[in-house]
Image (cartoon, rainbow, N blue to C red; front, side, top):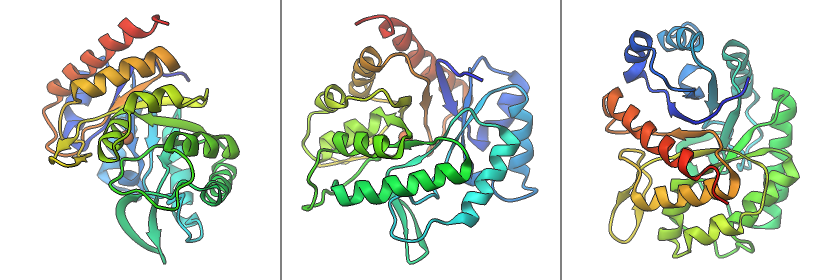
Length: 273
Ligand SMILES: [Fe+2]
């Protein structure tokens, strides 16, 4: 099954709107970690929505960059969910979320080093072998840099994807947030990222805290992020794109407007070289 165009992050607040209205959304991205409890009502809603829409799974618990052993209990649950919803694609983040088996509910950054590339790529390959399919890794937003970093973020992302033989989920908002927070040029990130492994884009909103941007997923995408999105489409093509909105979640019709804005940009820029 193939997916195209601008889809939406599925949130429980919108289950009934979706089931009642059957909106013209090409697909939904599902936060996998919310559907891992057997018999939960969320799962029965998901199965109903799956009857009408293709889905992708977005995970936060693989902790791909951690020094902890991979959590195969978690991966077994993800594998069960894969059997139920048959997602088109599966993703997690290029980050770590656990240490000494304690989970932090934060996507924590990695130093951009050869050692980290080797470590993370090996773990991604193990995850892919276990799940029996390739995954996408997503670039995260971050609020600190490591003195030890030897590479740019985009070179780190590309090298891991190459060594792991996985796909990339490129979050355009996260590129913008990091460029602001670490005084980089966001457009240069897009221009310098030389890969054909990108399979999906993310769009979201941030909050400007003055001296840094906080990736809140609680607002509309900014006009600057949309300009970057245009450049990403010109360079990488009209790849499937998800709008993520996780806090101060608006009514469903507002999200449909966001989808329409992003889809219009995609249609405009898809054929510009
Ligand atoms: Fe994202």
